[in-house]
Length: 168
Image (cartoon, rainbow, N blue to C red; front, side, top):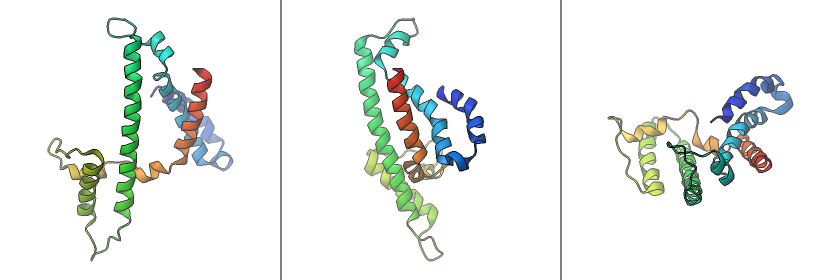
């Protein structure tokens, strides 16, 4: 997340231009681009060979770098699966009409979360520190479905990819 240092140092100036000129999505994309660009560095073999060091100060072997990059690809697929499952959770949760006669929102959210988690990840939900796992679906600062449609992240991903290609 070192890219956010650059993000925060320029965001105020960018936002002062006004959302009427660039649009709020453009300014949000700008603020994420630095962070996403920095993330490309740790996936570049030359960068890892030059700057990567273990606790003893030794550079990683080519085999270790290759294994790491293969794991990065697997993690990206897992991340995509998580994002799709979370967007599906939002969609199915909010398509219900929650009325006095209809389903209870809290119960529906809990049941849906466990159902999607079981289907998407084939892992049981576990209680953590005495908290019922069904309440996990309420601990988000925004809806996952909104994140899927958040065009600013798409702009930032494109910009960061182009920037990384020029820099690396």
